[in-house]
Image 1: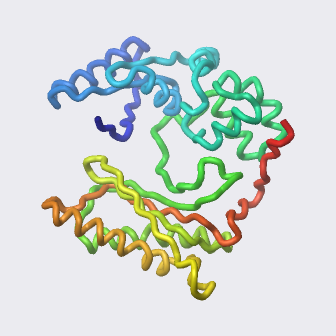
Image 2: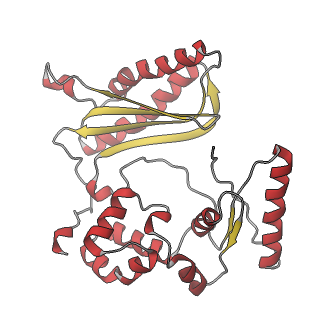
Length: 285
């Protein structure tokens, strides 16, 4: 089984919802016919966030429509587990369940007063938008940052990029340098250093590989953590070259469409919070 990135089609010019549903059904049928049986699920909704959730409802070969209007959006979201909402990850899901007994989107909306009391401004506003099903009308934003899904308990900083397929050692190493620069800039901006790095690669066939490397635990303290672009590249380049050589040995050059770099195990155990953030006091509940 395999999966692909979501495709976005603006059907706002369709005269009726029924017409939009017919267009989506025909699109899925054409893909199935052209590929010899590839199935697609689809979602129709007033914004991308709701459409993506709707597309998951009838996987792998169906479609779901969320009608316009606040009432329709809330009715659709109410029974959904909060993890179904893009932006709520595993850590946040567990914290909401343990501290506030929030498991569904209906629970999330009902417990919003408590969330508003304990959350940071950006986090509680995000939770409200999730509960209401608000989102951009267009497609997904480019994924710039790969932080832990709950920034208030941040244990990692990173960046990943999706791009046109590339292969060959020079291009791949250059791409590693680009992404390492982004991560280094964020580490330096926060004045922190990391002891562990992760390299993530996604091939054109959607196979994902992650490789970790850690700084030596012994020796001088300066060598136990990294922060600069050159230090990050020096640690991850051997892993990338190993993947390149392994693919070449298998007779199929490494061709990737996504690369990510993540840093973790910060000096002092936890990355300091961004300006304006505070830790949620879940012990109060």
